Amino acid sequence: MDTPQLAQNYARNGFITGMKVLSTEEVVIHRTALERAETQLGPLHYLNKIHTVLSSAYTLATHPRLINIVETILGPDILLYNVTYIIKEPGTPHFVSWHQDLTYWGFDSDDQVSAWLALSPATGESGCMRMLAGSHTQGMREQSPTDDPDNVLLLGQTIKNVPEDEAVLCPLNPGEASLHHGWTIHSSTPNNSCDRRIGVNIQYIKPSMSQQKAQSDSALLIKGVDGYGHFKPDPLPPDQIPADATETIANLTERSSQITVQQSRL
Image (cartoon, rainbow, N blue to C red; front, side):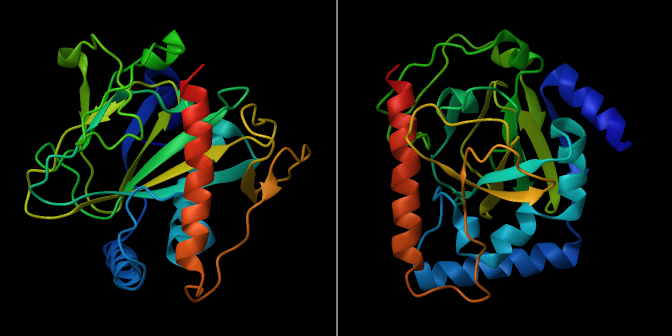
């Protein structure tokens, strides 16, 4: 499918899926880089701004095949807002409840795209994403916090009464990606497979957007120009993992969590 058709499908459904981004060799390189980093830094699941300390994460987020698709949706000027590894270990009960991403980030518009890039098989068995087609056109839905310890989301936030029989399963082979709109309702089930389910979650935004729930925020210009200056520039990652990487990631994750909690209390 050509790129303009992908953009049309995205506009209609609120997501597109199954785009080939990485070669088999690239998948091996980047999964190995992640798992080597884990031996040095510990678990990297759900930590924010990981691209500022790990060059592999930055390389994935700026992959030309991925950026070409994002450009057809957002236009020629693109900021990289966040990169997060979302990892479900095999045979664990962890899941992601039905939710909408944009509820929590404090942006003043929805000129944003989320990418999900698979570094291992994302199947129905391993807990691939499920999407509700067209739900992005309905705006923000009410989401209630829960206290389920197996829910990956920070506050266990959940949209109730979702017609699950209408959900579209979005399996991905290693190296494939999906893109979804920030208002698209989505979720995922536990990983019942024998392999880790490793996804790289990437958020792209237009420079015209601004942060409404914090005095300052940061992003990195990766294509085009930023004529607004609404975000402080994130640093590029060094070639080697820096000595203070753990502290840096913890601070950035805490800052993002504060924005999420503040937005959720509105």
